[in-house]
Each structure stands twice: as structure tokens, then as C-alpha cells.
Image 1 (cartoon, rainbow, N blue to C red):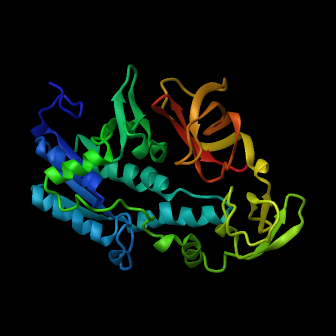
Image 2 (image 1 turned 90 degrees about the vertical axis):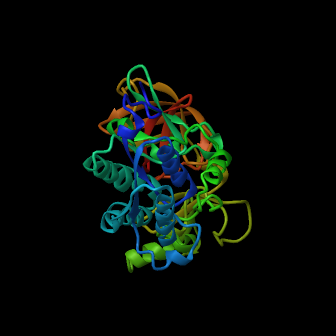
Image 3 (image 1 turned 30 degrees about the horizontal axis):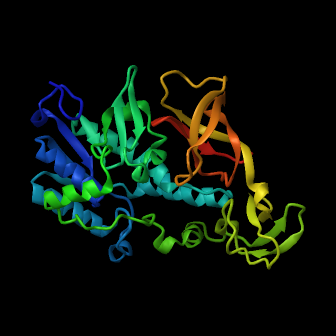
Length: 368
């Protein structure tokens, strides 16, 4: 008989490691699985020095969150462990974050964290604990397809997190489970209330855990002293319009905060780290029909080939799905052709492919 996690085992004989951030989603995931009779082990990763974060509610994986995760585990009666992954997190996520900004790109550290520390390293640790699966509180769904396990968008569009999991490999996907994928956030909170979890009313995390108050520039300057240099804001013809304090303060498509006077609205259309220039232009200069990507991760049934494949894509986490075609252009590389030109394609962000609700993979947008 198949259990609710798709395994032919009795729940009590099925060991599930649950990644517990201390928030309501992962807490409900762990508590529900424990209630269903699974052999649950909660694991929280200490990723950052939480000296400052403890006093800042609303951050991801802060010191308070570790305490909250432990409280949930103790109250429900399953074991909980905290693993110190600070060194790995700094190397794989924080260092990449700083270098990406200095390269004139806009990073997504939460994707890098999922790609490395959480799914690469935590999956390995779960297997060392003889777990059958690793469960998380992400709002996505893995569905057994005709040929393989498939990753689908969460049932609730407003909470779908598939964009942030595009780098999940097939081996990882086979081992992962997402019990909340078919639920809404309101339903999750209702379950937290029913289960009597102390975190039922806890707000969602908003900040990147190592970026206090959203000040990205301050973090980069601290990690790379002297690397943030002033330069010039220029128009597309190279005419100097004003100074800037560092290209890390700008992102493609930005309009506000340029401080270059009146006239027609101008937007950041390109960042040039070599010359330390921020190039601005009219909104139509942002329109782009083709997107080049690297580090492509593909989860489709057949390999991605050189013939264009019809898909829809997301080029930022909050953008709508856009009709497009994608084709492989080399090892780990692909080109996306948007059916309609779109403004605001930013190097360093992800371009993620979909076939209806199924997420097919994605890659990192690179400068053309």
C-alpha cells in the first residue's frame, strides 16, 4: 500500500527528515507528517551569525527561528537537530552574492542556497540519517509522471515557489517531498492553529538573512572592502549625466533614485563593471527579445536539443509567464526567444521554463 509520500511503506517505517526554518510552513510540514505517523526528524541549518538577527523578526533562519523550530519539535515529540553550515553558506551563497553584484548582475541568493546548502548538502545529510525522503515547506508539487518524477507549480499561484527551485536536479527531486504544495497559505495557518503550533501567527520571512534592512550595498562593501567604486551615469550615446557611488546600487530596469535631473523618464538599461558606468535610456531601450542563459538545469522528459521548444518562461520571480521558445546552444547553455519583447531582463536573475504547470528547469541570465 502506497503511503501519502508515494512510498510502499507503512508511515511508521518511513523516516522523513524535515528541513525546519522555524517558520509556519516548515513547522506545519513536520507536525502534519508526525501526526500521520511518520518517523520524523527535524533539522535546522544555522547559516549565519545570528548576533544581529535575533532582534530582527521577519528574517529567514534567524536565531529566534532556531528556537521556534526546536519548540515545535519538542511540543510534538520528535527529535530536532541544528547543523552548523555557516562556512558552507558563506562560501556558496554569500561570496557568490557579493561577486555577482560587483560583476554588474543582480543575484538571487535564495536560489543559490536551495541549490547548494539546502538541497545538495542537506539531502546528503538526510541520506546519512537513513531517511527515505527529505520534506520541505515549499509551495510546489512533485508529481509522478509517465517517465519520471515531475516538479509542478504550487496549487496557489500567489505562493508558488517553483521559480526558486529551478536548479533542483532529478536525483534530488526523486528524494524530495513537498506536503504543502496543494495548499494555500490560509490553509497552512489553519493547520498550524489546529495543531496548536506556537508559530501559527508568525509572519512570513521578508529579508535575506544576511542582508540587514535590505542594504545590499553595505553587505558587499563589508565583504569586499574597497571593491565598490564610484563612476558615471551615462546615456546610450556615452554622454555623462551624473555620478554614482557604485554599480551595486543599481539594477536593470531601475527608474527611481538615479538623481540625474528632470526630463523624460530614464531607466537603467545596462551596467558596465569594467568602466564603472551605469547606462540609462528610455523604457523602449529595455525591450529584449532574446535571453541567453548558462548553468542550465533541465528536468524535461527528453533532453533539451537545438530545435526550438515551445514553453512559457519567468524571467523574475514576480513577472508573469511569457510565451517563448528555448533551444540548447552548448553544454549548459541555451537561448530563449520571447514571442513578445519584454523590458527588464536582468543578468544574474533566473529564466525558468514551464510546460503549463510543470516546471522544466531553467538557467541564469547572462549579459549578451
